Amino acid sequence: MEREAQHFRRDIGLGEGHAVLYLVYSELVGVDPDAILPSLAEHLTFHSDLDSKEQLVIGGPLETPDATNSGHGIYVPRVPSLAAAQRIKAD
View 1 (cartoon, rainbow, N blue to C red):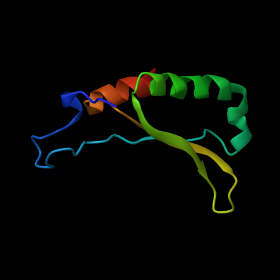
View 2 (cartoon, rainbow, N blue to C red; view 1 turned 90 degrees about the horizontal axis):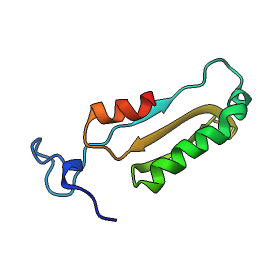
View 3 (cartoon, rainbow, N blue to C red; view 1 turned 45 degrees about the vertical axis):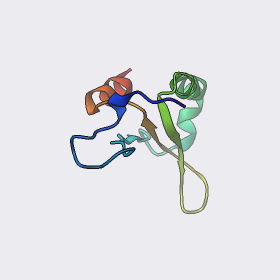
View 4 (tube, helix red, strand yellow; view 1 turned 90 degrees about the vertical axis):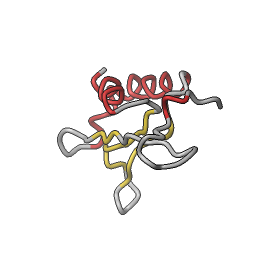
């Protein structure tokens, strides 16, 4: 996969090939992990769209210690800046 140079920050001393990543934490509103089910298809489409545009590094749900769905999740968008990550999160 070819990456654009703007995704790598050489100005902060990380060295060649090191990227600054932005982690987006998605927190469930309320306490019922199944509350996400009505909007799950839209949520998965959003992540699939990011992936098809090569804008998704990694993402997925977070489980509880007993291996059940917590309703929370994380993803790391491939973006050049914090502002760009915030724009994706806002959409």
